[in-house]
Amino acid sequence: MKRLIELLFAITIALATGLGSAWYVVGSGWLIPTDVFGEWATWPGGGSPDADPYSRAVLARTGQVPLGTGEGTAFFASTDSNGRALRGGCDYELSGRTPPVRLWTLSLIDANGDLPATTEGRTYLRSDEIMRHGDGGFDIELAATARPGNWFQMPDHGYYMLVLRLYDTPASLINDIKGNALPHIQRKACR
Amino acid sequence: MIRFALWLLGGLVLGGIIHITTVLGLPLFAPEPAFVRIGAFALDGRFTALPRSAPGVHALPLLDPAMEHAVCRFSLAGGPVRIKAEMPDLYWSIAIFNRDGLNAYSLSDRAADQKPIDILVATAGQIAEIRENPPDNFDNVVIIDWTGTDGFALIRALVQTPGSEKIIRDAFSAASCDVFHLAQ
Image 1 (spheres, rainbow over the protein chains, first blue to last red):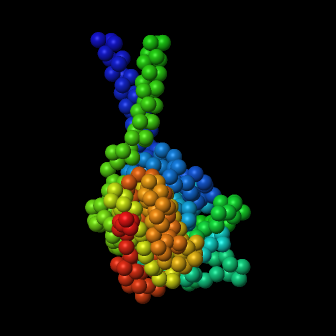
Image 2 (cartoon, rainbow over the protein chains, first blue to last red):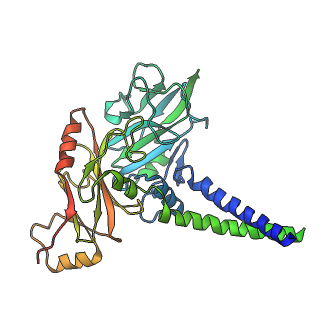
C-alpha cells in the first residue's frame, strides 16, 4: 500500500512537471525569442528548417507562417521601454529609427494574435506613409484619439503587442540593430 | 525521508522525459499546423488568395495586415511542381514551407531582380532526371531540392494603394502551382 502511494506520488510529480513545463514553454503560442533588443524580441531562426524543437512545436500547434530569411524579420514588443505592459487606454510615443530597410509595417495584436478593432479601422502603418525628421528618424503617437503628425490608433482597453515587420532586411540586420537602431516605446498619459 | 526524496527525484526525472517527448512529439500530432489549416479552405495544386487580415479575420495567424497573401499546397508524388507567378511591380515575396510549417526557401522581388516567379520544387531523384534531359527554356527556373513529398508556397504582396488589391488578386488568379510533366 505504501509502495503504491509512493508510486502514485512520483507519477503525479512526473506528469505535473513534464506536461506543465512543456505547456509553459510552447502553450502560449509564441516562439522563444532568440534575440532581444530592449523592448523588441525576434526569433530569426524560428522559421528555418534547422529551428529548435520548441519553435517546431509552436509552429505545429499554432499554424504560424513566419517570415523567411529572404523576406524579412518581425519584431514583437509587449512592453514599453520601462518594461510596463502595453495597455489600451494609455498613450505611447514610438520614436527613433529603424535599420535601413526598404519597407516596414507597424501593427498591433492582442494576446491571441488578433488585430484589435478600433473606431478608425486602420490596422497598420507603413514606412512610406509616415512623416520623418530631417535625419530620417520619426515619432509615432499611439493614442485612442487623433493626434497631429504620425498617429496610430490604440484601443481603449486590453493588453497588446506591437509588431514591427522589416522587409528585405540585409544580412547584417542584427548588427545594425545592436547600434541602437530600433524605435523606443515611451508611455505617456494613461486613463 | 531519503526514500521520499528518491521517489521525488524519480518523479522529476520522469517529468523531464515527458517534457522532452511532449515537445518533440507535438509536431507529429499537432492539431493545427499551417499545412492542415490550408487544406481546410484551399484546393491543392493552385493558388488561393487568403482573406485580408482584419479584426476577427485571420486565415493563418500573424499575417501582416498590410499585405495580400495567397497559398498553394503541393505534392511531389506525381512529379516535380512548378510555381509560376507574375507579380505587379510592388514589394512581394514568396516562401516555401514544408509539412511541419518550417520555412525551407524564401525570396523577395528585389532578390529575384523583378523577374517573374518561376520555381521548380523537386525531389533529389526528380532533379537528377531533369539534369539528364533538361527541358527547353529552363535557364531562369530556380530549382529547389525538396526533402519530403509535400509542402506549401505562400506569396505575400504589399497593398501599396487601395487599387493594388485588385492587381495583386488578378496576379494570384493567374499564378500556377501544379505538377510539371517531364518530356519523355
